[in-house]
Length: 623
Image (cartoon, rainbow, N blue to C red):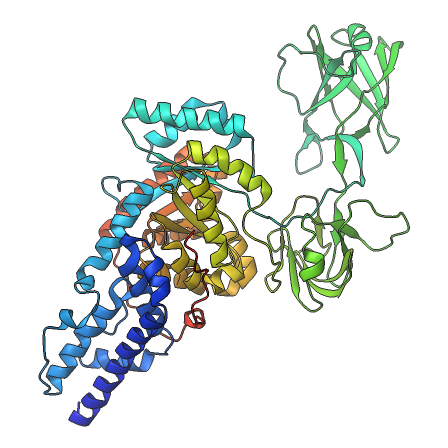
């Protein structure tokens, strides 16, 4: 390379270095508020952000052509890596370097200590790395874990390093039982599995659907010719005068249960026929095959939809011997079916006047009706249904459906389904009143607390304040990045989080995919990994990892590859499923194998929009 080109290259590198120092100086008040362990981490994050404000791909190519580092692996030690390249280019340009390269860096030997700092932070947050793998395994507790010590013990025994309790489900009674099971398992197995409890946060969901029926449906098994191969099994359960089913003796498992009076049940014998008319006016006959004190098991060769109070007739040898009625059956909501170009009314109130003609459903957060704007996108049920807001009123929002599933018949929208508004700033914090109440329990029993739907640095400061009020400032915190605002504000969120130790980031890829767009998810999750490594913050790789395996016992090829990518994080999270123990063993094996092969590859450093951070905006009061 000509001397003039080398001199020009050196000038570019020194300009980059100067931009790093300038950003450090600009954010010095915020760096000063970080905890003692995190000063260098905050500085390194700012250095990396300064670097990523530029498109460096051409510079990388020129450095590579000289056999030099192309800056593609400088996340954990940005300025020191830059200094090392500058020193080599100075030698090539014939310039005398005034002192060894590491001394140029304000963070001294960070080129060596950056990865070590991240490893230390991961250990402090998630516990020691298990033998043979550097990546921990986290598992979400199913409700059954409250009643099954063997399940919790099996998870710990097979490689689980952290159990996760989601405060959006179950109650304090179940949570306490899960915690006790884990403490027992740790003691019995000599393990140190930790507990993280996730606060539910202000999840935006569809409200209850009042439209529906009190109905039970059963089906029969048929072959390809439509011939019945196995009848439906229907249990008739005795109902006391209080209206509640009495304790039934064990019978062969049934497909459905129907409540009947004890008098009617007492008149039945094995071999009797119970005749019932379903909601379509079709007569169905149930053959009594087993009898117990408070229950009968019947078989039926035809499917049926049966409503509450349906009339029953008991026949013996073709003669009617008793009549009665079914008791109250469970309410089954009738979801709203939507197709592309349909209009949907999102309402603040669950109860609506009967003259409504358009499909409608309520939502759980009233802030939507003051924050949403016409033209903004809206998604329902994990992105299965897409729409665009057309009108916003004080009590309702008119939505035009733009996509509704892949089938010609559209998609069904029921109650309790997630709603995502990626372009809407709801103006609400990450903690709800319920979260503050739950935090009382979490602070007493958990090692780590997860904060859901983090959108801005103030959300972090509020959690730190709440922990301080409870005298639990030592607890580790995990910040869940699952909305576009949280990703856009990630650098400032991280700088605020570095006031605390230890801290981690969870990449909640489910909601995040909807918020940023499925086509952008791969690059967004990669950017989160880069920024987290720059801040020396451990990452939890979450959402749908080995989900098919956990539910069915057989993994898909795509999710095995996805699980292997988790080796780039410090922890991988599995969700609950019938085969969760097998999934833990499988993931443990993958992570052991990948450790022998894995080496992070060089990144092409195009400009990152998320690196454009404003002047310091974090509250000056240290929470």
